[in-house]
Amino acid sequence: MKYVDEFRDPDKARTLAREIRALVSRIERVKQRPLQIMEVCGGHTHTIFRYGIQQLLPDTVEFVHGPGCPVCVLPIGRVDDCVALAERPEVIFTTFGDAMRVPGSKKSLLKAKADGADVRMVYSPLDALKIAQLNPDREVIFFGLGFETTMPSTAMTVLQAHARKITNFSLFCNHITIIPTIKAILDAPDLQLDGFLGPGHVSMVIGTRPYDFIAREYRKPITVAGFEPLDVLQSMWMVIRQIAEGRCEVENQYGRIVPEDGNAQALSAVNQVFETREFFEWRGLGSIDRSGVRVREAFAGFDAERKFAMPNLSVADPKACQCGEVLKGLIRPHQCKVFGTACTPESPLGALMVSSEGACAAYYNYGRIDVSAIEERRRARQATEAGAVTAGCLGASAASIAECVDAGVASGTVSAIVEPVLTAGTLAASTA
Ligand code: SF4
Image 1 (tube, protein in one colour):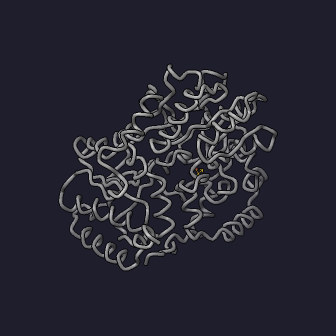
Image 2 (tube, protein in one colour):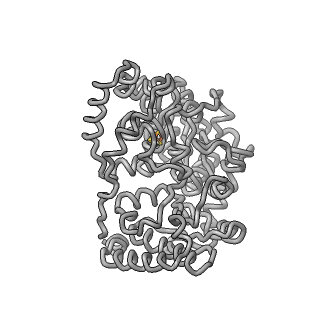
Image 3 (cartoon, protein in one colour):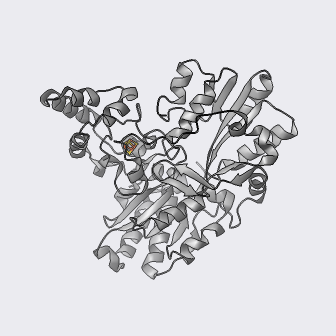
């Protein structure tokens, strides 16, 4: 298939893997510690796990999974706001499907729907606008979520609603921006990154110039990367080649999609409708200055935050949730205390387990983890461990897990169960 098969060619993958190994052998610093390359985008995380890219690389090269999955970084308080909006009787709440299962402090949108709220899954904000036109006696709210990739379509929809004078449509804006986030990561004292795979979809809108500061001020190489296995491998080769040659530049592997200056039309729509917020809260990363946008005053009638009262509370993650540490690359997904037991794709405790682009979900789905063995060991431990609280919580339903964990369950016992049965080395190396 055009644009698919040629990017999954096993021979080319082997050649690139060989070239990467040769480059790495020339880099002195790998004698002290492995190279750490952050893939900013969740789409890359998905490709890396699905195609076993890590297995093709030498042990001295590690991926750090970045914060580029917007569902994964949505704070619990914003999910609670969504639920509060959705439960208003006059509201039809519309959202992309992957946001439906993100857990709030009490429930997800999916649970709110099961409880009677009118929550509808849409494929585009224009679908939500159509629902508003068909239901003039209801208030239709669209849950705007995502980086610069999805921002233009939301902005265009607000412009359309404005042009067509549709007054029962509004946007709950949770759009976030990538550049301040990368800067916050670079400023974090506990990170030792050697380079970046830049986000391909975002760059299609913003171009490659906004990344110049990464190379110029922070002296880190970055390659904007596509999403097929060979895209990721070639981009890794380009970043590592820069490191081996002592260069720090912005390179563009995804030139077939990403123009240097971005998409002028999309950027113009975004600038018309949105303005930067002073700060925005990210799950696991805390508040990041100027990292989100809100609807401009000129379009206030389409802003759900101005139109409706909502809790607007900051809610801490459950104590056992280690999404923040995974997002910063401080631990691997399977090292989270509740990975694969209290937190699974079927009943996620943290947001990284919800979206297919989340590192934990990708690791769980493609890591060839023996779930039945986890279950068996969990049952065995439950049978032998004294303490009804621990046993009860390990077998708890998703709804009660947070309370159990907060109640002080020794979650360390869970990782002791998970760790030995992980067989990450058996990740499918489809391209090999
Ligand atoms: S396993 Fe669950 S709680 Fe732990 S980091 Fe992953 S998503 Fe968060």
